[in-house]
Image 1: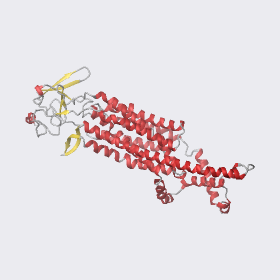
Image 2: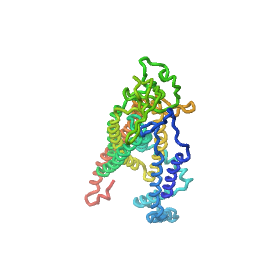
Image 3: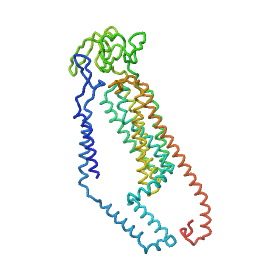
Image 4: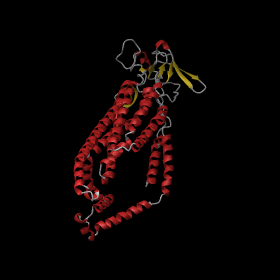
Length: 482
């Protein structure tokens, strides 16, 4: 079944590439007679987006081949099945009913029977499982440790879903870098840090022999450090570009219209997008037409050609403008920004193993499988589904210029970088704070339970000592155990 599932995943990856092969060729707004010379820094650059899906689908298909050589039944599973059948036959035997009654049964035999029944429980039919599921679900959700740990994992998964979906776009817009470079940095820094965080968390739990209280303290410490290293992210970023008619007025007096009057005679299309940059003032224009340019010059170089537009009536002193968006003066800040993000991700993933141990230790033995299923159900419904929608809606509120298609908003051309950074990082900070609160409550409950257990043990200790004295020196300790 694993092999067939992997093949289905590979087919899904192939289906994702079909739009590239069956759709129309890419179309651009040709706003100048000489055409458009695109580079990877151009906002309209698409690239071979489908190539990654093909490579991933091929890799999954190759990895699925060994699974088809596995036997249908593993030897261990066969022995377990025989054991379950024996236990079922023993428990259903009429001759054993009177013998297995509570009054005639030893504690050891009772424990063995309970373990056998626990192992038989997964063999319920569908109808029996449906009848038992609501009771087990309510019983599991009423456990405060389980509920709080799952809620903290929901917050962490919401943060991870927002980062995985929009972090490349955020880096591209915030620091004016290419999409390929942004994804390369994420793959080289963020993903390895996540792996390191998970592994280090498991090693700490094993080496330090952490119990429930220790696991809760480790989770809280990791999230507090993650929250601390998230604070500088609010202040690392680039200012918004100066866009003529949108965020920058070309004349001394601000005008109520979107674009200045110097280009009104050009009859520029309202939906055109071919950005050009004035290198002297670092002001960007949506198209050469909006800059009032009337001619084009192409300068050939060894590796690429650069397009310039001249005779621009809306540009100061009539300077020529370059094709493409203006480069940012703080693009170098993307590396320290991503290093802090990676460090925070590693500290957040430090809680993965101890939080999972809290879930397994916090529920009954026969409910552990169902508890893990409930955990992942909540993660899918409450985190991975709504989080990208929430992040996308927050990012859309920072847009300052929308491209229109058929009179409706289609895609955002320019964002307010300060608002974009504050709202995107603010959402991440919000989810991290929620996780810290949940882990703090978990640690408080665990300490209270541990304190109550020690108090109960200390009260029972004098009674045990008195019973040992009364029993006499000739008796074994096992005979007088309370």
